[in-house]
Length: 222
Length: 235
Image (cartoon, rainbow over all chains, first blue to last red):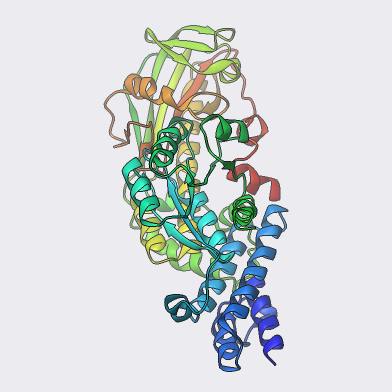
């Protein structure tokens, strides 16, 4: 019974079926969505950890399909919405410590830059991969990055920039963070960046796609 | 053709509103999927966007003093713009340059922030996309008006090119805005050369008897990781 509910939950997230009221996708119209199946699974005795594992696996499939150009941004965001609806039922278990996330990931768009679509996509996919995400927003000053890293020891950090004029602002952030927390692992991303640039400014990794970030983050806890 | 002050073109949203097909093409949605939440939302939000009264843009025409493809630079009104070789090549034969700026106003950004703050990322993404399409459509109309003006002088115009694309460094925005000077578009630059409102475009169009219109956009840009290139590849 539990396995069947978890399977249905997984399908809802993969295909973006949010709840009973949502008419999309058409072949699932009138059926429960991620919201209802997560609730039912808990009531049927599924552990929060098992539900989280199912959500992570489903979002993993979504991320993979996006990386392979098999689905597009709107579909990915619908899946994220379905995941959020299911995740809402797990919040009390996160708060009580009954279920653990993989770790904490702090993310922000570097100061001078107001772009957030790429950063939001990464934040959403990393959360779906089982990480707690602290989103610092856009135009984030050095001090705010440093403060967040100090408040969340052991957290990994992601820094985004979309402009050639703002990607150079990432280096002083990395230097300031590493000065107070040398062990903090940092990944950078954004349209004008490259692996070479990331290495040249002292980043630990470069993420071209959200999936790259997830794969890299998972290596940190392997 | 002669030097002009900034020519302004104001637009009502309905004049430059992207069609459902254009929005769907951009977002890679099937317009036939009427119950898709994205399509339902587009239907809901478009009337709200008609309140946008701040879509405007225009250009200033200045003589080209010198253009060197080898140096990748163009001198306009004694000010040198470093466009890099690729864009300079596309402007070859220009006697005049139209320096343009156009904005779709701040409503798109305000709405995007509103939806993002509620965790409605899909809705935020759609509004952002409509904003991008709107400012480009407004600029299409301005470019068409310029083409007609040039034809009166038996001149052709190039495609439009913007800092940040095709190796033309974004830092050139400062010089570009310096040349454009005071104008009613209301677009300003941050220290990092980001335009405010965000849904704005600026750049250069070449004008001359031997100018030809070349391809632009993803076809000629080298940025392999750009999200817009990724979307276009999926179409």
